[in-house]
Length: 197
Image (cartoon, rainbow, N blue to C red; front, side, top):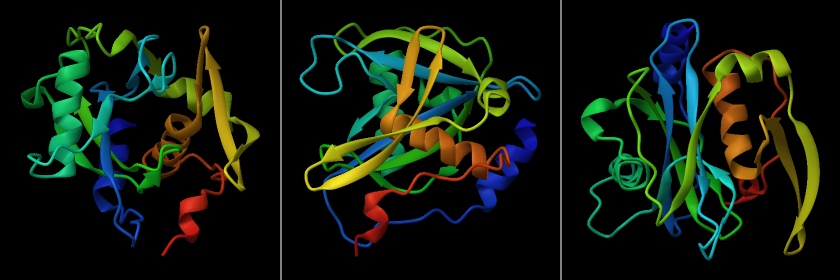
């Protein structure tokens, strides 16, 4: 399962925004287990100004000193969950998306050792948890809700897993990971940035 997913991600030509804006990147950590890979997710600390209490992949804004967006994703993962870049096999990006705070986010897929100890940075992260990829494959399509952002209506996917709500941009990124990497027949929610030029 994982080997085929890596091959598909390596061959994938991700969608790119044509207009430049404020950039950010997230890392999608997938544990190295051929038949039982898991996604590493975080819950943002409750005292933060944005995204507090939300389920997210490790990531954040690109610093001026960051050589690339893949570097941003790795740096943020190290800062937030103690994941060292040397423990990440980086395979490629998925399509760029725009957050509700107008950041242009590039998700990067990385494979990490299965039982690697991780440590949440309490300044940013309340907790770390894992979700088996099989959960999403067996659960089927996410629930779709609609929210109003400015003058637009956005389709927002979500899953519930062991008391955690996985929704919004994070759920959308998981949808693309499932369709591209794990060949799941899933209709992707329409993203408003696909109309940007």
